[in-house]
Amino acid sequence: MRTVLTVLRKDLLLELRSLETVPTMILFSIATFVIFHFGLNRNSLDGQLAGGVLTVTVLFAGMLAVNRLFVAEREQGGFDGFLLAPVDRSALLVAKAAALFVFLTGLELIAIPAFAVMLLGVPLWPALPGLIAVLALANVALSVIGTLVSAIAVQSRARDLIGPLLGLPLLVPALIGTARAAGPLLVTHSTGSPPGKWLAILALYDLVFALLSYAVFDFLLED
Amino acid sequence: MITYGRRLRGLSLVTIATISLAYALAFFYAPEDVDQGFIQKIFYLHVPLAIVSLCGFIFGGLLAIGYLRTGDRRWDIRSYVAIHMALIFGIGALITGSIWAKASWGHWWVWNEPTLVSFLIVVLLFATYQPMRFSIEDPERQARYASVFAIVAGAFVPLNFIAVRLANQYVHPRVLTLEGGNLPASMALTFYIALLGITLLYVTLWTYEMAAKNARMQVRATRRKLLGEDAMAPLRRSAAPS
Amino acid sequence: MSALIAVAVPLHTAVKYVAGAYVVFLAIVLIYVAIMAKRLRRTERDLVDLRRELDEQRADDREVGRAA
Image (tube, rainbow over all chains, first blue to last red):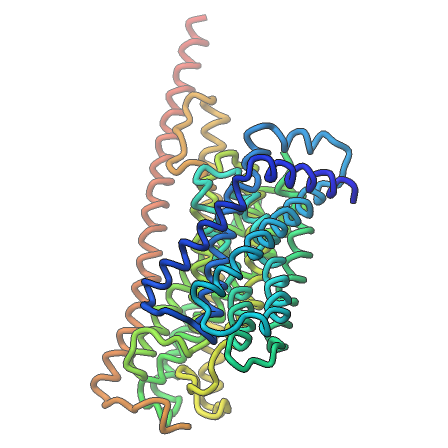
């Protein structure tokens, strides 16, 4: 547990000092909102369309973070250092996934209000608690799969391509769950509670892939 | 040393016999479907291909577990061939599914057929298996990473199926299904024989490819042993498991 | 429900689609077999080369043995 916290602290400090990943994700998502405005030719969105646009934007912004997750470790020998230390190797997975979760949360803190201002045609406030629940589960999915895929991609030659290539199909069930759960929330007279079926799917997906990743991650770190 | 070639003749004969029987039954014995007419005959090809493909992906994942547990490269090659074959069968399922959709719905692709859609996602995922493999140079690492991928992707298949099925709007009727879901006995018999035939085809082709790879590896090993390291020609695709 | 599903297309068009599907399947299998045949030819050729080189090596060794 201490290992996890140490590595996590390192990554968060690095990000805080260099401010590379999260601001990029934020800028990217705002640009994406603009593109969606022109691509869909709509001034405001609501319902399933809003849910879908939000989910897709967060997903693609997340891919940006995924690409850079292990780069420092690979290039500066962090992997070797970690392997030499007498710690549980899966701690690296948990730490990196936690860092990714924090980055995504940081992204959403800015991107959701931006979305509400720029594209959302309905008031955000009543939908917010439900949306937070949905996005929390979605972030777990993105973090777990993103870390796994990033660890694979960092060792391959086609680094930047392999990450999204592997990650996007794997994330489809999570995408379905997030978009369909968020859709009914972003309507004029929403009940404020997301549909249980989709939350259950998201939770199941998170559980299965978190456990699976934890089990296989060791093999990715072996030398 | 395991030889695959021995079983190949018997396997091929049984496969040919079963497939011939299956499709003879499909066209001469099974009754024509009331709603879809003659088009429905594609069912006996498309659905077995899809089922065998999905099972093949899961089979590949299980073989990959064998590699991670034993470290024996042979498991990895079995896993690679299993996934490779399942991908080919999967593409066949997609194409035949598309033809069926066009014939009965008028469009080459339909989003409200959850099996086809979840199939597309699975095929897209496993299509990345080979590019990912060949982009990792170190052979042992490549085998390990490929096994991890095969296991995660194998676990993904059922989850994806469930999610896409739930996402389907039940307002729209399913396209590629038989009315009522209850197959009359003659159709069911034909279907199961077709399923058996396609499964046997998968096993035969898998054995065929394993035999070829095995032979190739032994030629290289013998060459290396007899003529020394210098006589080795470099592998064609970088790090491809040959 | 059944009225929404499929239009039973006339037989001659239906046959074309069904035949198409089965032909695609057959084509995939045959193409695969052809690729494998090519690979096997290469392996056989390598084996022949290997055998020839082995024979040459044995002949050289014998000569060296006689000369020595």
